[in-house]
Image 1 (cartoon, helix red, strand yellow):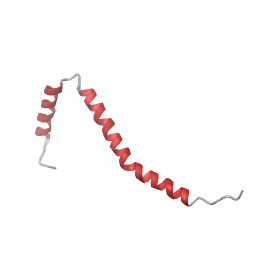
Image 2 (image 1 turned 30 degrees about the horizontal axis):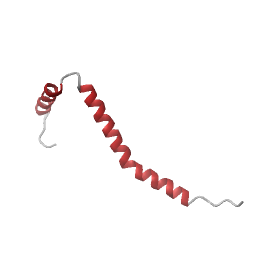
Image 3 (image 1 turned 135 degrees about the horizontal axis):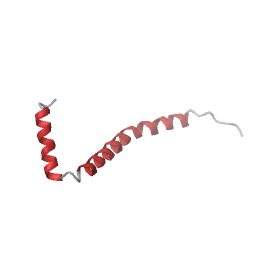
Length: 64
C-alpha cells in the first residue's frame, strides 16, 4: 500500500515522537480517536435519519 513498509513507519513514528514529545502522544491519540468516531457517526447519521423517516411514513394512522 503506497510503498510504505515497516522501516518507513518506524522512521515516521520516531519523527513524531521527537516533534511532539512523549507527554503529548496520548492527547494526540485521544484526539484522533474522537475525530475518527465523529467522522464515522457523521457518515452513518444520514442513513439512520432516512430509516427513521421511512418508518414514520409507513406508520399506520390510528383512528381517534
